[in-house]
Amino acid sequence: MARLSLKNAEELSVMRKSGRLLATVFDYLDDFIEIGVSTMEINDLVERYIVDQLHARPASKGQYGYQYVLNSSINRVVCHGVPSVTQKLKSGDIINIDITLEQGGFIADSSKMYMVGDVTPAARCLVSKTYEAMWEGIRKVRPGATLGDIGHAIQSHAQKHGYSVVREYCGHGIGREMHEEPQVLHYGQAGKGLVLQEGMVFTIEPMINQGKAKVKLKKDGWTVVTSDKKLSAQWEHTIAVTSDGYEVLTLRAEECA
Image 1 (cartoon, helix red, strand yellow):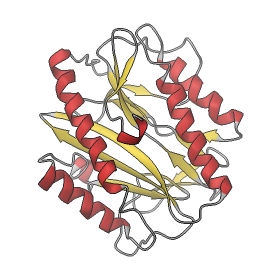
Image 2 (cartoon, one colour):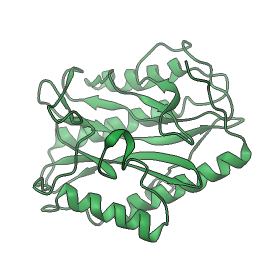
Image 3 (spheres, one colour):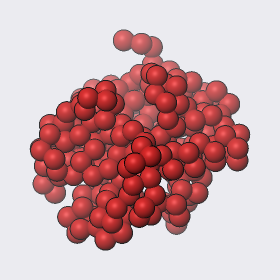
Image 4 (tube, one colour):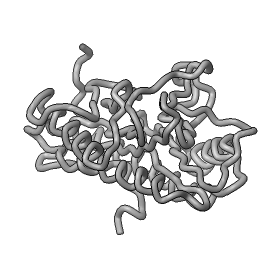
């Protein structure tokens, strides 16, 4: 296993700035997500904003050979949806936009669900309960807690509402590299797993399915979809373990109210 990276106060200060910048990208994007917009238009808008306005680097572009600055995952797409000129948002769609940003040598990672037009109550409930599940996990973060505490909280909340948790994809440590140790599972047993320490920084990004947990990878090698064709939702934040709890480095404006 790779060595666990604990961030010092100076490094956390830089990561805090990267996180704040990424939060502003979503604030900027909020008014642009609407019926008829293509996922490639969203990608291009985000790239221009990050590069031209924030003077930062879209960290996903070029990562593992990926050509775009974000993932756009609609309806049954669990994660890693690829932007497309021909894929345009329709009324009733739910879409996850997953964006990364690097400035000062450190990366922030976050995603947000958007609901387009007239979305069914069932889809709205999935989006809402997935958001709640993420926060159930976040609130377990503190020195001395375990990764199992986080996973158990997320899994319990999802299953209580009749949903399933995707197991093939998880959160991850983050810093100078996009993916660092540890892996952060969104299921597990309370009290089990790695003990959290001050200075750890990682993502919590549960993927919650309306139906069964099983997923499959499409032929493009990127896009992951539900096997039963039911809906999936995801939210994500970058979290730092502090001396007495946690700090959400990518907290968005509407979440501060």
